[in-house]
Image (spheres, rainbow, N blue to C red):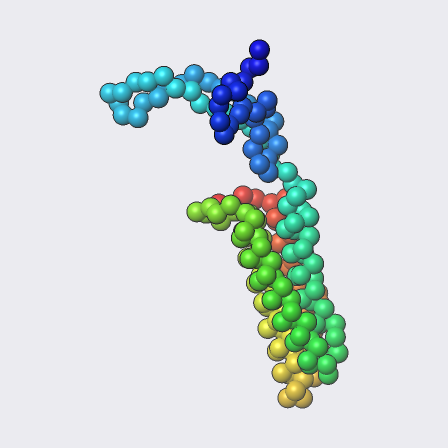
Length: 180
């Protein structure tokens, strides 16, 4: 005799409990009275479980592509200032790629009423890419008004500070505190 009722239509009982995007480490069902209001006491139960996210998925689908876009945005600081179109094109492509990535992320991740650490990381990365765009435009403008020395200093500063800032943000995301 089967342990499932074959007359049930549209459903079945899984052999094990599973939650999408999570690895269940342990679970238990506990008898717990259900009391929707003080006067009503009914039988009930609670399911308690311990779980952890599948990190590999988020690394390959979120973290790595976002990192590539952020690093791509810095390449404008390494292109000669005389190549204004290329510099601004790289910076603009980076911001547009990041916006497209954010739309994809919005369709993959659950909508929550609070900010998660990943949300803070993506917002921080977005700000860095936007600041890189502003930096490239500023150095191009400074080069155009014969302020080459200032533009060169800004390029050198950006080549150092953008990676350092991103590494600090990445370190906070991977190892850091809590958010939300």
